[in-house]
Image 1 (cartoon, one colour):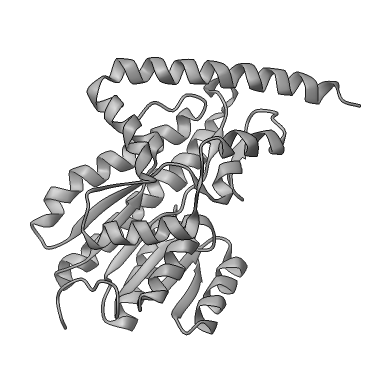
Image 2 (cartoon, helix red, strand yellow; image 1 turned 180 degrees about the vertical axis):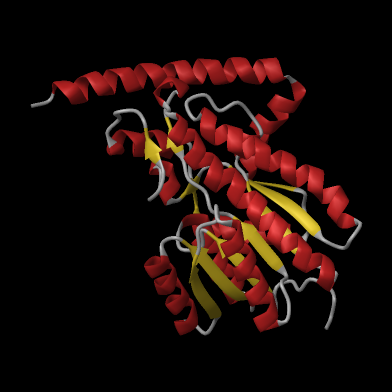
Length: 290
């Protein structure tokens, strides 16, 4: 076996949350570049549709039902994939959900749900992949965090908590893993046009804001199409970048955070105040409609 990670032709890649959004876009782009992709998702029917689409275009793809919060299931999928293909080049720990709304509206079950998927899902993927990659002597783990993991995230504190943890996990593991030939990167999207902008299938909004107003708010942040995002992401993965931040203009906020955390905090507070007023007004209007 050639004990180096392949970029990307002939590689084996597992993508959690591969049925939609960023996961789907990454799967399709990896397949175009010659990788065999395994789409792992709770939305198995949708994952099968995406896999069929990839196969019809001449790519190699399989769909597997997976709950990333179940370590035994994650470990089994990665082991069987490595045994079947003879290698495990990439694991994209990408599955995630969004819960939007102030902390006062969260229940403890909301916290457990988002932690199980966004944080434990990544931990499970890392732990299972790491053992396989150590034995084979190569591999690249890419964990999906968010800009919310690099700066304050008022109004989505539970989400930001999980993403800060994913950044910390990835940055701590990267130098450790390098000593055993494994690469680790953390993906920090700005705003990408995916279902998670409205919570996704398994996420939710805790505020009573009409969907059209949610979409209007996100559009002001210039979301990048997922297919374009995937191309830029894989270019950065090929360069083995530690922190992959796309769209690039979001780096401005990261620089502000690093230069002056207090300045970034004041910006976040001011912007959240505007959002809070908008939510309050839209909720009152929505509730007054016949």
